[in-house]
Length: 179
Length: 255
Image (cartoon, rainbow over all chains, first blue to last red):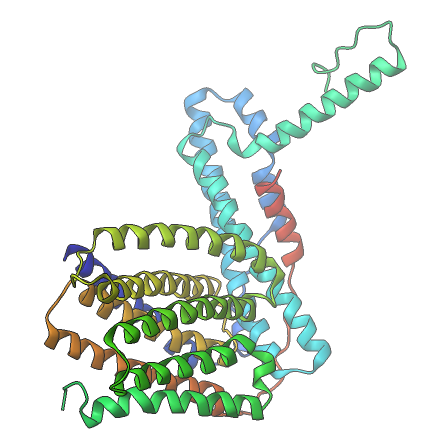
C-alpha cells in the first residue's frame, strides 16, 4: 500500500504542476517593448577579467593563502552574479523573441527564432557555468575554474617543445619555465 | 448510477471513443494529420482499441479469458503508440531550437531509463490484487506504463518551464491532455493494483472513464478551436550581445 500512496501523491503533485504550467502559458501576457527595457546591461570586460585564470594565478602568488581564499570567493561570487544577470536577461530575450515569432513577417520571425535559440543556449550554458563556479566556491584552492586554461598551457608547452626539438635536435629544450 | 453496465457507464465507455474518431476525421479534413501523424494514429488506435474492448465486454459469446486477452493486446499496442506520441511532442516543442534539442534528447533518454527502473521496482513491490495473473497483470502493466508516461510528460513540462518556452498551442494542448490522463490513471491504477474490492474497482473505472472523456474534450479544444487572434503590434527585437556572452560562458564551461 505504501507504493500506492507514494504513486498517488506523486501523481497529484505532477497534476498540480502541469495545470499550473498550462494555465500560466495560456494566460501569459504578450511581451511588449516594456519587457525589453527590463534588460540590464552587463559589463562583459569586467566578467572577462573575473574569469581570467592568469588573474587568479597572480593573486595566488601575491597573497597569503587565507587572504587568497577570501578574495577568490569574492571573485567567484561576483562571477556567479554576472552569470545570473546574463541568465535573467536571456529569460527576457526568450519572451521577447517568442512574442516576435508569433507576430512578425518571415525575416523578422527568422531573426526572432535565432534570438530565442541564442538566449536558450545562454540559459543552458549558464547552468553549467554556475556549476563550474560553485564547485571552486566550496574549494577556493582547487583551481578548478582554471583547469581548461592550464590544459591549453600544457598543450602549448608540448607544441613548443616539439617545435624546439625539430628545429634544433642537439639542444635539450626546456621551455616550460619561460612560458 | 455508478454501477457497471449503467447508462452512464455505457456512455462514458463509448462516447469519448466516438469523439476521438471524429477528432481524427476532422484532423484529416484540416490537414493536421500531416503535422501530428502520431497523434492522428493514436486517435484511431485508442478509439478502435476501446470500442473493440467494449464490444468484447458486451457480447455474451466472448469468454472472460478472451476479453482479458483483448485488453492485454490493446494495452501493449496503445503503450507503444503513446511513447511514439511523446517523441513527436518532444520534437514539436524543442525541435525548433537546436541549442536545446540535443541536450533534451540526452536528458529524456536518461530520465526514460530511470523511470523504467522505478516502474519495475514499483511493479515488483506492488501486491497481487487478484489470484488470476491475467486479471492482476493488466493493473500492474497499466501502473508501469502510466508511471513511465507521466514521468516523461512531466520532464517535458519541467524542461519547457525551466527554459520559459511558450510551446505552440496545439502541442501544449495534446501534451496537457495526455499528461492529465496519465497522472489520474497512474493514481487510480496504483490504487487498483493494491486493492481487490470490486466496488472500489468500479468507482476507479468511472474516474478513469470521466478523465478520458475530459482529455478527449481538451484535445478537441486545443486542436480544433482556433486561437483568438489579437492584433499585435510588431515587437521590436532588442540589440543584444548574446553571442559574446555565449562565447564567454562556453569558454568557461568547455575551456
